[in-house]
Amino acid sequence: MNYLCCQRLKSLGFLNKRKVDKPKVRLFSLICSAAALILLHAACTKTVTVTGALPTPLVERIPANLGVYYSDEFKFFEHKEAMPESGTYEINLGSHNLRFFRNLVNALFTNVTEVSSPDLSAEQKEGFDAVLLPKIVKYGFLVPAISTLTFYEASIEYQIVLVDSEANDLGMWKIVGYGKAEAELFGASEAIEEATMLAIRDGGVRIATEVMPDIAALLSDKELSD
Image (tube, one colour):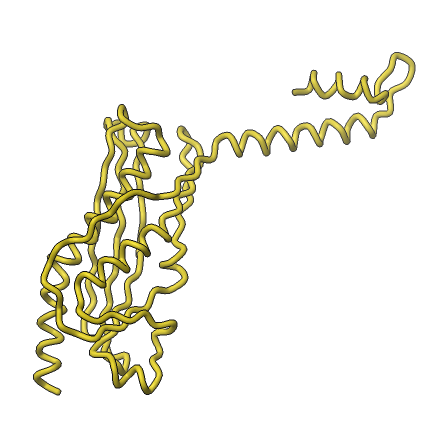
């Protein structure tokens, strides 16, 4: 890089045998060094946007009028992590995760309405049996260079909170979804995308099979008490 910069300086007349403008040389050298660092960082950063088909579980719907609030953090969730031997990864999973959750919740309840705030209006309080508040607590992944295994792994920890129309807690659950992708079948970015997609799907299955029976029982008891 320094050799190329010097050649460029000569072509621009900054360097000659008789006179050297040292401030100009130093300035151009700094510019070259900064450009090299930017290019090196860009080359080492892998951006992964999660896509792909995510079928929802086929289960019996819970008869309820449910409100659901997706925070901006949930909608646009991103994860950035630097690994010494693998570079920096930027994982964009918010939009795909949101799409899956919308399909999931609509498959689990008979009537679902998204709300713009967890603080309900008087009209909404009259219309909802409960409000669901999903959250991504933690996302993580492992690459073969770190785990020494032959596959990439991803995990997502979800928190599911159910409140009544007055924002009183009815229940809280934490579910972890796991996914993995064989290193020999994918490139690094594609493997992390595949593992993340499978982690989202696994989390959805666990919510449907482990959380929904509890929610169904809670809403049934609430209806009887009302």
